[in-house]
Length: 388
Ligand code: PEP
Ligand code: CO
Image 1 (tube, rainbow, N blue to C red):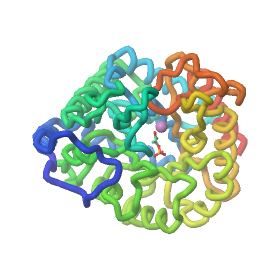
Image 2: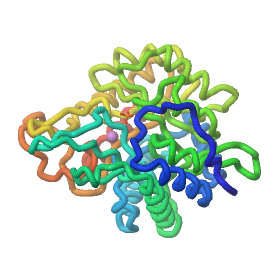
Image 3: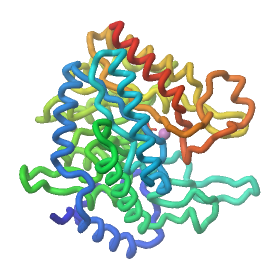
């Protein structure tokens, strides 16, 4: 089955790299179009069925993983450690909340990042393009490494496939579904396929994809692409979201589609969610699954400029989220977290810790919860849910 390598969503699309060679890009797109699907269509259909149950209040999405996976993360030990962490968190959740968790990893494809700035200024005053994820360029702050190389899209496919093999071969009952931000259309479009059994168009890069807060314009390329596929999708909704725009997105992505198709992943910040979420629930209440991302609206900086997140703010946003959903007569549908099994102190408990640099900051992008922090967050959410 060959890909729709020629398919192109409306351009210009936001947050796309300036690839260093159009010729290489065309060759890479053609090659990706010939590759096997990473996830065949039966997987997203199975997930969709489970999300339909979540929409009915009979399950809860636990979506978690790195902010940015690196290619070096695709080795079997790391993949198994991440799957085991998600499995532990899911069991913790299920034991407390008494509700099945649908496990979705930010895994096997989370290789591209949207960025607010085009350039980064180094301590010596030189400017280099920002790191956009291993599928685009390298972390090393040199002009050479930061050039956007289309061949990295093929490497992303290979690393995703390696990680998926580990999940298939080594991880039993705890196998999560995989997901990533559908950001790079030059990756997603050639991997968009037509299923031979049902004739439907679907994304074969992962069963679940989400569109980020920076690229979800209702008339934009990413939403047009999301509308073209049958997979369940998520859309991030930040504090600056225009409610009319969200209405257009909801109308477009849920038209003639069963419940469970669209999750709105709200990431407003502990101090803003109380203002925005009730209005959104009033308009779109039971048409979507409501997932809380308590990470991205609560990102702050240390004195050193390094990003951080305060655990109390993360917990506070979750508490508001659950209470607001219950007050509207709705069921919270899930949690979207950035976590790692690695020993890190990227997120902290006390503001006083922000004055010194993190002893162990290993993320290629945003700060992640470590094992104990993730357990605290999931345990708190589960308790709030079981009290409702
Ligand atoms: C992310 O999930 O890492 C991300 C960039 O999110 P958002 O689009 O919500 O900023
Ligand atoms: Co992030």
